[in-house]
Image 1 (cartoon, rainbow, N blue to C red):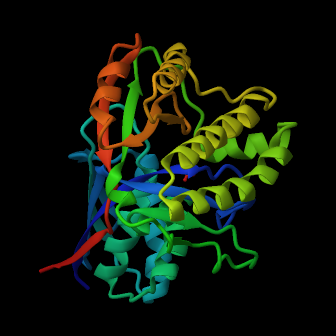
Image 2 (image 1 turned 135 degrees about the vertical axis):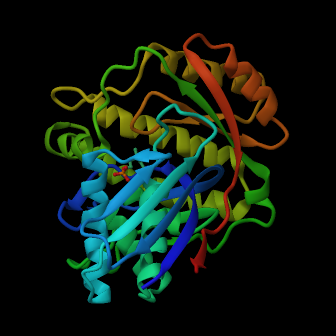
Length: 332
Ligand code: PMV
């Protein structure tokens, strides 16, 4: 047994995953579509070592919490079962994110763990198998097995082998190079967040709008794919913003509510609308947190970043280009 390292980009969904058809295997209730982000990279090293009595892990240079270690061990058990071994592993994982804001890292984290652990254990999996494995760590991680624009399928099989992601085949030439994501971090005084796993389950069980959300997703996926094939940023942006607002609307209507927004989130949404009224290509999307991510193009990204930096409560702004494929390497 040996060691391997994976470098993986996080991704941001333009059509969101929110709700499961099976909790045990983490099977999504609907498809989703995302863009990998070059600026948000997780690097993970896994070394299987017969001398270890238990798995050990550092995260961003410090020992991982008991909860993170337990989740990692549980995931490594899936890899060990496939490899037919019981050997424990040392995991060193770091988020190369240019911020400590708590931007979601489960997508790149579990994808990097899946890629590094399978390589280190000598388990050769196809890309769809790797995607299905990463999905068991976190739904969005299934998409981070690939670079660029990626689509995740809900699938219909009970074993989840078809609940996997793949790169979108038809994207207009040059479009992935042209897009940018401006990430406006909302910090300070954040109330305790609800984890996406519990929050999406709660939405599915209690929101009167959950059914409408599920009906919307296939339509938004189809519209986003048409826009990508045509290189139509305006249509893609409108779909992404509408989809994110619909996801949040269904979550907000849960009883009790799942409300991720802070005052600065709303102020940023208003700023994005104002930018658009001034003719800038800018569309917002939000995940399970207060931050606002703005889809735009390379020609406008810096001006949009400068504009949102002024919004009270926005503490930091990053600009990211589209991210590429993961890089996996054997270590001696
Ligand atoms: O992969 P999870 O369980 O962290 O859920 C992701 C949920 C969203 O980020 C809100 C949407 C998405 O598709 O990434």
